[in-house]
Image (cartoon, rainbow, N blue to C red; front, side):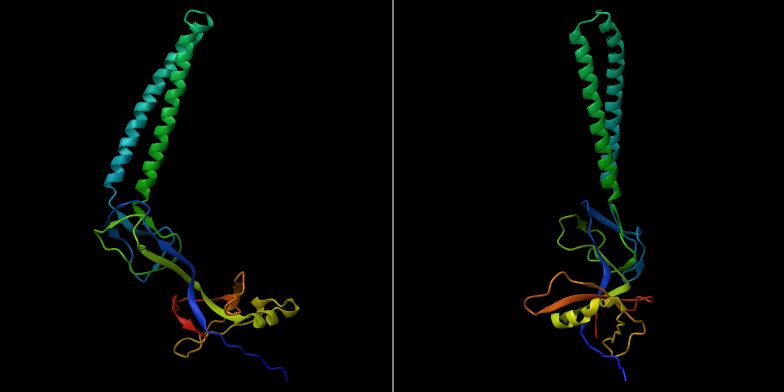
Length: 241
């Protein structure tokens, strides 16, 4: 009679998405807004950096923008007066050229000041560090009061999406080729996961991806599989079979 053929591999668990959380501006860490090891949502604020310096920069940029707009309004009004006079030869051509140049110069200054405001707003927004994905947030690697920034050696924390969770296995080149014989769809092959305590995981998995190349030193191909993890029981770094 037909019987199923079983093959066993050692698997390493990993998040389906692993987001490393790093600060994008430099400042003192003043708040941690999540519980370590708990589920966080995309867009949830995880950390806050002291915003006062960045708020002051934004206020200064807005003030400079107001000054440049006032200068631009003056040069526009001056050009509006000179242009009809120049058409009647009541003023020199040089006066018109000077008025046009002043209007263009102050317009550029307004655009530069507006860009400075947008940059200051962006930096102020970076003081609230959010999660880019839904997932489990790890233990924080910085403490309140620490000076953090883009060049710090360690990340603030990491967030991993674990439902579904990836399990990576290494199969031999011969096993991979045999599985693909007859253009067989690998996703149709049912997978079972045996956990480190020898218990059988209740959810079935499926093949998800194959690496782009065979490792020439071992002759194996890295395969990614996906298993449902509705209770977030499985965590990255674990092993199974």
